[in-house]
Image (cartoon, rainbow, N blue to C red; front, top):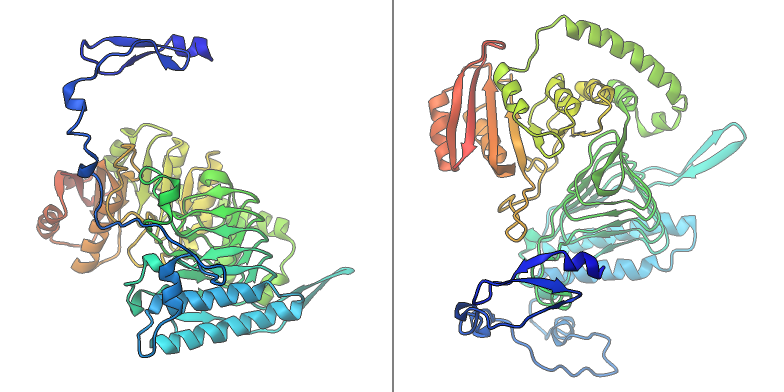
Amino acid sequence: MNSHFNEQKINVHYSDNTVLPIGGYSIAHTLMPFPEYAPPLWDKNNFINDDINIEPHTYREEVHTIGSLEEQLKQQGEGEVVRPIIHYVAVLKELRKKSQSIASFHDEISFAHWAKDKLSALGATLGLPAHHFSIDTRGAPLLIKEGRGEHVISPTHFENGAYLSHPHPDHQLERAVEDIPQIKIGRYVRFGRNASVNAGGNITIGDGVWLSPGSCLLRQDHNPYGRPSIAARTAAMTRQPPICLADFAWIGREAMVGWDADYIGKFSIVATRSFLNSWVGDYSITGSYGKIIQYMPYKAAIIEALQPSLEDLLQISDWEKINSHWLTMYAAIELEHKRLPSVISDKLKELLALLPSKKSKVLDMHPESGELLSLAASKNILADGVFVADNAVATILQRVQNTGNYTVRIKTADPWGFNLTLPLADSVINLFTGKSSGYDLVVNSNVKKVSTHELRLLLAEAARVSNKNAKIFFSIKTSYDYQELITYSKQIQLSLHDHGVDQNTQQHYVVFSKL
């Protein structure tokens, strides 16, 4: 290891601009640094936040809380208003404690009813609408018999130790009632033993979702580039974004889903013991760090075509036959597709060709046939498709899978309105690392007529999730006042890069860049 370091040089900005070798783990010479690197520039008073007070704290053995603020919050005087967040945290703490006593299948189901009642009572106390907290406990246990085997599928239930963890209330005292996180849980959801979901942000869990034992959904992010470990939790809280687990998503045993994973797709699977910190596409199997392992287009085909009930799904077993049937259908679809002209404009192909493979990311805001997504996949470019029509999912996934590259994610709907894929409210550029999380090319080739307001929202969202050097391509077949679009683009710091009529598609197009 020492020889490796000895071969390196480091410029430490000393007074004579000496470039010093590193010998072992120490710098060979000691020189005085430039005056401008010394005080008063590094005077600690330039950086100390006077709003943060630190003082010794004495705790009493008979008191179970550690912080004096937490103790005071639990001992409100008569007539004092308890802040909404305290009510919320108190209920979640009570739920967590009670889940430790779950000992039978009956207890698991009964706990879901009890949790539903507790949250409903909390909502009534806080004056929240009835839908703010909801746990769908409908249905009876279903006894599934196949051959000589049998299994019971319970309605929504919590196994021993499963819980919704609470945010730290003392950092969020000023949260208004309407800012209390929403919790919405569907039918026949399984919370496996010791599975946990951080309830610091809105949670939507669809029907038939399974969180396997030991799985964990983190919803708070402590900035690693700022405060050190002991201050990251105690001195400041960071963002707590929402998450949606779409219908029949499956979180594998001991998998950990991070704070940037705001969407886990329909019928998707997060592999056992995976860690991921990004959203998961519909009908896909995803492993650690968002690596896509497999697509399931055949599953998308039958689900989207038949829209089977939960009970119907439990009776489907011959998935190999379904896959064979789907591939026969897909062959006919592709034969018809080859007779149609390409929907990708020459200008868009040009923009795609300028992107370096394996390092770029593309967002298609309204993929129809998936031609752009499969073209990006063939070049090994990461690409996402959102607002995908249900009947196009299977075809798109099959086309991408046939390229041999698993670089595309799609979602059929977005539960958070126009917040498409990235939970990045301020900037897609990390201030400390300089790395970008945004897209290099954002495309909206929407062929449907949209209102001026809708188009503005789409353009604003395209600008929000793109990086600083990105191109934003808009092409619309229906008539629209492009001058008005260009005027609005200036308001959101976009400049006109190119425009015209594409010779291939005969569509008007506009290409924007960030200012």
